[in-house]
Image (cartoon, rainbow, N blue to C red; front, top):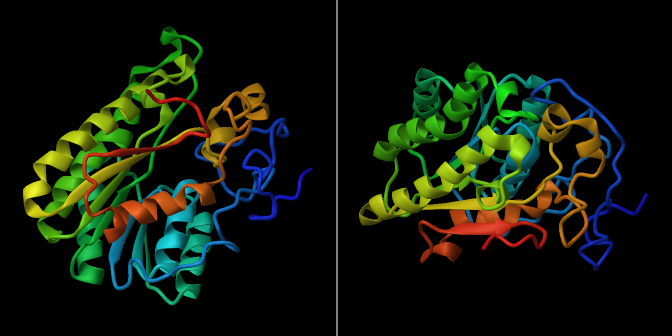
Length: 297
C-alpha cells in the first residue's frame, strides 16, 4: 500500500491508493466505516481561509462521501450547515462532529428526499435554524448497477429520478424565496452525463438531466443575483461504490482514468468551495469537471 497521507506525493497518480482495491460489498446505501481503504474527506488536510464566513448552507447527502468532504470544508471556511441524510445516523453524527469542531453549527435532518414533503421540511428547518439560506448543495444521489434493461424495475427507475432530479427541483423551488442576492446553488452531476456507463442507465440519465437543469436554472435565477453551477466528478471513492457496484468493478474502480485511480472526496471539496464563494462571481450555469483526466467533450 502506498502512503495515503494527503500531500505526501506530488505525482497526482500516486497521491492516493491505486487499484486494485479489495473486493467488497455493502448494503445500500453503504457506510464509511466499512470502506477499505478508508476515504479521505480532508479531515486532516483541509485548511479554511474565511471564504464562507457567516454563510448558512444546506448539503444533501452530507453524511458521507463528497457531501462529508464539502461539509468539512464549508465549516472550516466559516459556514453553519444543515446536513440532510437518508438513514446513516452514525455517519451523520461523525460529519456533525467535524462541523462543530470547526466552531460552526451543525443541524441534522434525517429522511428521504424522494418525497416532496420531506424536501420542504429540509428548507423549513434551515430557515427556522438560520433565518435564511446562502448555499444549497444538491449532492445526494441514488444509483444501482443493472446488466440489462430488463433487470431495471420500474419502481427503481422512478426512485432514481425522484431522488436525483425531482428532489433537486423541489429543494430549489422551496429554497428560492429564502435566498438573496449573492446566494448560490451547487449541484452534483457526473462524468456519466458525458460518458454514460451502460450498467448505470437510470443514474446516468438523471445526471444528464442535472446538467441541463443547472444550465437552465442559472439563466432563470441570474436576474435575482442567485448563481447556479454544478460539479461533474469522475470516479470517487465513496460508500455508494461498494454498496451499488459489482465486486469486480469495485476492485478496478478508477483504473481506466488517465490518472489511474479514483478520486478521494477531499479532492472534490475545493471546487464546491469555489462555486459557493465570491471567487466564482462570474460563473453561473457552468459545469466544472473533476474527472481524473477523462475527457468530457
